[in-house]
Image 1: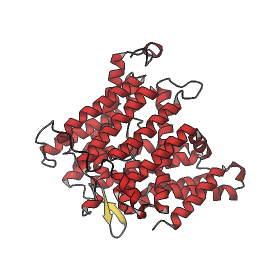
Image 2: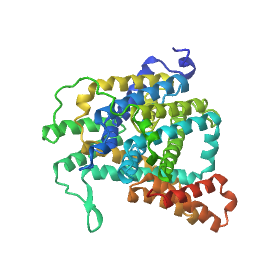
Image 3: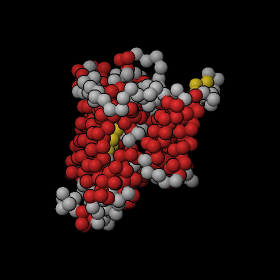
Image 4: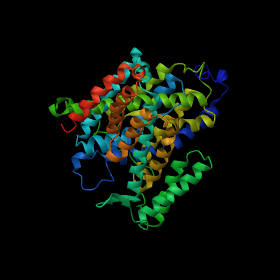
Length: 443
């Protein structure tokens, strides 16, 4: 095992890898609660049961997808990077595809499956890097920042801090309400721990909120700590029913597939480079075995869609494990082991409510909008498509709409500015695709 993971060459040992894997798990364990609540649209009242996924099944699918992805990354990629259903992509799945477009969740899973297959083929062929390089770096940063604002908006809404207002669309909620106060308290505690550099701050903040919520009767106490693993049957393999439904084959669904594929592209690339650089694994500014790491991600997404969850992706929280000493794929195997162990703690995790997860969404949003500083705002031809990408996501409640807006305006502003030679041909293809996306959006 030591030889396979090159412990001596990388200056590590079993203890450091174990602690790194455990730290990574604690840093990203919030997804075990946030993902089921998001995909089941738990914060949206009065929805037909057919629009909601089964909470227990999604919980199991989340843990299994994270475990499978992390195992493949550890064994094949040999990176100390863990995977799980991605934040932002799960919000797009639930709030844009299912809630806004009214698509059955089975169709959304099918879109994830198709995008994963394309991702796998592009990775194997080597075209993935070429497509990524064709897209302007400013738009990549804009997409990340826009998703951050979108996730933060959802978190504020779930907390009751932002509410519907008939006169102004949105307004400030009742800050004296019990669940809202609990969310504000949790946000304060999490921010303090994050500022102090405490590993697993988001997860520990949720634990503290649950305890406080139980004390003030805002959260029901679990009947038991350990219990049987929920059934995966309600979601397992459900995506395949979409392929026999004619309503699945629309221009809107094509745009949805492209969005899943596009966001996963950059989410993984950014995470892999950031974590590998922190771990000192980069060689001549290049990531060795990058193809293997991307292969692990595409397989994890494909398997996750079959289990019944949104796109699985590499987690930037893996950097917390690296900071604790992780240097090899063994740490990812340790993280995977904890995700499998968590399956038996469903009774405890199932009592967590949307207000409890709100601080996690807000904090993740804060981390994602840091890319705003990397955009050339002094260049109007860059600022316009970047701004439209960012602002359209939270205001239209759709990541896809934000991406489409930015990708349509980018070639226009660049051509008017006389910078036509800087526009890659791929961007013209995206321009046509997203114009068609808006034309047939209501199909």
